[in-house]
Length: 409
Image 1 (cartoon, rainbow, N blue to C red):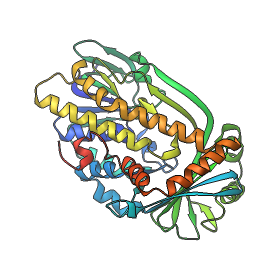
Image 2 (cartoon, rainbow, N blue to C red):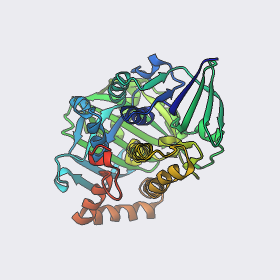
Image 3 (cartoon, rainbow, N blue to C red):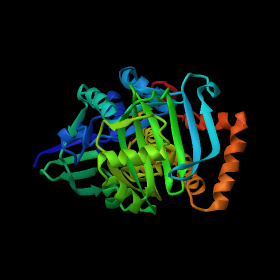
């Protein structure tokens, strides 16, 4: 059997795992990305219909990697966010909360980037790094961890020995399960339908989120006269609406959105995902660490899932790079606990914030709806609180890793 020895093996080749591989590879680590997905599917328009709202910290990290200037060409700044509360699919209450870029020091709040474009740019950068190997269509069938090394056996017979194993394989994480790391999880009985549509009326860089009783609907501006949608509702309703013809689906979507963008038509396929809350009880074990959705799966209500994963990447990369320079064992529990200590509070705060927001703002209880409407009004009248919330959303509060500040490690 073919064997190799590397510094870091990363299970899962999504955006989060790929960014970690790139940072480590550029800093002298020998890295293997083990991805079950076929290479052609990784770059398929059919499999990539999501879009992401990148915050300031995430953009700084991409800038350090010399990726942002390329991605920026097809990104769409968000300069205004409008939050509304709806009492039904066709009735919007007069409670609104507005955030605008004039509350920040720069000229936008987030940057919208399509998943497929971001993945292509990252992977092109990885392909130029000789320290990184991408193993597509590969599955780990044996995962052995001891105090000295990680041994991975792949389904093609290849054996990889590594100083550290990183689980970035989403939720539920098979690598975490093999490492006997348990998760707390909760099923919302909600599903999100996502896709991209073209529209008649200009979006003018505005993002809109409507809190309907069964879940939020987000319409997010994209480059050109296009928008991404994330429509979350009870799973039974979501499955029924998802199966409608394109014309009937768009009619329902436009009704929920009160025809804000005029005539709309699909530019992408739609996709549907079940929504659940999950976070790991531990982030690390000897020689093993989890990041991204493998460590925490949050409600899409605030669109912060990828930004949270990128903060994991920035923190872990900084710890590993500095530890390697000091000659430490990068897979030791002592080193990895620094990452866990750094990330625990931020992860838990985002997990509970998104859970609370979904329960409080999207529900069928009249008293809660009335209370959330009053909360909208109070927040709208407080620039201090709104500035604080926008600072939090920027990813630049607290003990920030260097990459999120735009600094090299």
